Image (cartoon, rainbow, N blue to C red; front, side):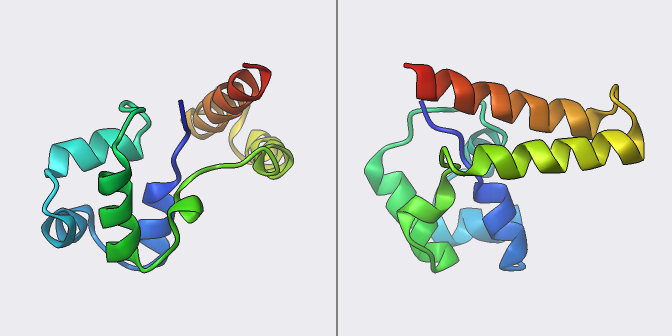
Length: 105
């Protein structure tokens, strides 16, 4: 199982999800699920299409173990700004949990 950062990369590139779907010839709904970590097993071909459309390496579409500390810092910053019960904090906390679980397996 992988945790993807496709949405972050796509937004940094200024590409809409609709445009990414057209570029990759993948469905909008599938890409949305992939971006929101509701789908965890895309094929290498799918990841290659996405990476090519975004002009990045496939590895750039995943969180790595090194990202955990950065995510923790961001989570603490958001706790200070929005409170511990905010949606933003919950999202980051869920990603950290997924990464920690992956690293333990």
